[in-house]
Image (cartoon, rainbow, N blue to C red):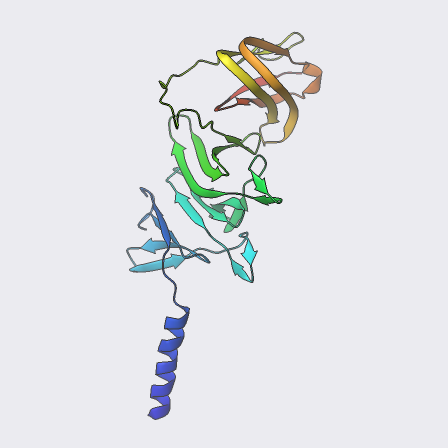
Length: 262
């Protein structure tokens, strides 16, 4: 009897000693199953609350960063993207944002290109992600250094938002960048056309990708000014197929597509 009581007491101590608490949560409307839509992290684990089991169900940790033998999870953000592949569940694990894939049960890291570094270490915090149903697009944002960055899926790079307006109030305005390829499908003489705001004077990048995200061509301009710009496309640079091109600069990014026929 004493031995049984000792073992039971030891089990309680063991459970209490290794129990964890949820440190941060993210919620979303879940229309596809009976789980709660509540995602929580403990620092070393990721969980979804189940109303059916009245408890937290743990996700696999495959693919996450491991520090001192333990997975490292710092931030979480989740949304319903009308699909289970990928999940719409994002975490910051050490120095990268990871997205969970239900089919492979694996956390895939996003590229860290563009984020600020101190002594070679990526600076990243304050994750937020949402699904834009109108444009069928996923938007992911993080804080790195003194700026907020958004992820460009086609370039697989992070781009900073400006800090303009944080100390001095300025009217919010929209601008039509009028990005296009003409003629499209591309032929000899086709060009990428776009217009920048009159007061713009900064870098502009044009990246061209295949449907599966492979970079075909990149154009980088250190300092373009406002107004109309055009750059020629050589059809010999592209095989037959559908291509996407992303025009990006300070506080803007636009993605469109063009076609190349043989």
